[in-house]
Amino acid sequence: MRVSLNGDSGELIHCPHNLAKIYLFESDDDTINITVNGTNYPVNPNRYPETRDQIVFCAFVKNEDSYIKQWIDYHHKLGVDKFIIYDNAGVNDKSSYCSSEDSSNLESLLSEYINNKLVCLIKWPYPKRVNGCVVGQVTQQNHTLYNFYESKYIGFLDIDEYLNPQKHSNILDMINDLKQKGYNEDRHGGIKIKNKFFYNPDKLNTQDTNFLKIYNCDHLTQGGREKNILNPRQSRTIAIHETTSGKKCFTVSHRDCILNHYYYLNKDYRGFDRTNLIDKSISKHIIK
Image 1: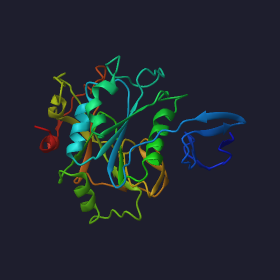
Image 2: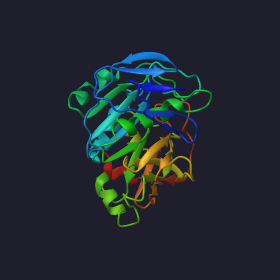
Image 3: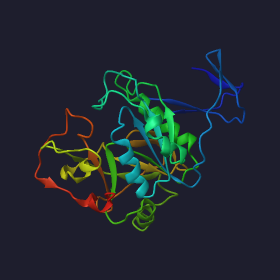
Image 4: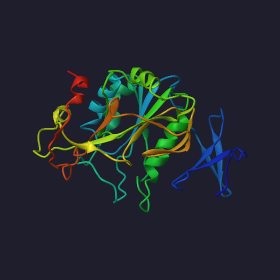
């Protein structure tokens, strides 16, 4: 594929997993001309909000209206300054897990958050999976990484995943403490948080924030389900659970932070496993 912008070929970055190609261009024009394989496409580029030195979380969302406000409020309380929400409503790739909701109106639901500049809502009408590859979410994540690169940190979580610091009530305080334990902003691409699945075997009420009080869980997942909070100055590309180019992330001990993954949330067809494990550590962060 040959791509240029206003005649400039730009910089091409390949994802090592071959899930995406990223073309980087710089332009201050209100209208630009992108040429792909000889065909010209005039484009009006989006202007995104300033996030310099802010902590930003992003999420790829499809029909999660019943639970997205809780996710935003919880992480805002932990110190996230801005949320970049990619709205995938109406797109069915026929191979991804779907929420129990069949419709969505995030523009209306999140209007107060948008007006207060807490949320930037981006329409993302692309399939999550194509031929088994998670290209829609991978390109979304890299879109965040490159368009909001002036952020201090960018977190890449799903709506059913909740950051659970074990010793701090603020993300930046936690990261600063990790610097005393081996994390280095110059040597690491960010931090990697280990996953722990939470289940609802008794089908208890999950409305509002009730699901945060369902403590049945599993052991920490052994590899492959971690999520990352990246330093965009040290990270080049990401593919869901790991950085694919740039500096390696620092793996956080479960004693400092875990990722509570509510596997059943808004999905009434899974997450009913019963274990003999209980973890109530998130209780100190629950919004009263």
